[in-house]
Length: 179
Image 1 (cartoon, one colour):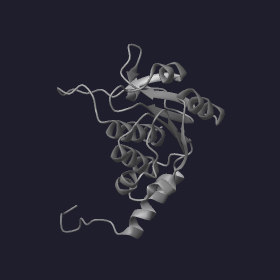
Image 2 (cartoon, rainbow, N blue to C red):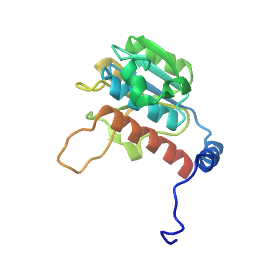
Image 3 (cartoon, rainbow, N blue to C red):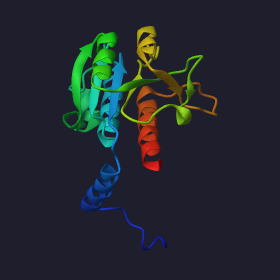
């Protein structure tokens, strides 16, 4: 393809493209966000959740709600596209996700974590992420069915929680679409 023929898609073309990916999507995807307090991180997470078709967002601990003005600003109004519950203790959020039929996969660096590309992401999965400073709490890790980490080769040991969430959501959908 020459660069003369390459153009950005118009809004109707993007809608058509996304409709095709939705047709290929069968599994439900949930997200549990524990104690993410920065509104801009919450807004980014909600926007990624809307983009990857998250069915439900459970907030836990002292997570900032998506309705916070700065979260709305970053999320560009996408909080209306994802169903979510106000923050509750993490064990309640995990129980609710499990009751809704989801397996919980925490995204965290632990001694038993597997690389994200090897994690059990098939079927109805609820990804779980923790706060900016300390990650997933011991209670959340205990509630998880498995733990996965995002392999990194650079000199930085971790990613921003919103970036890590987007990567994990994308990998979960990619694995479904590639299968």
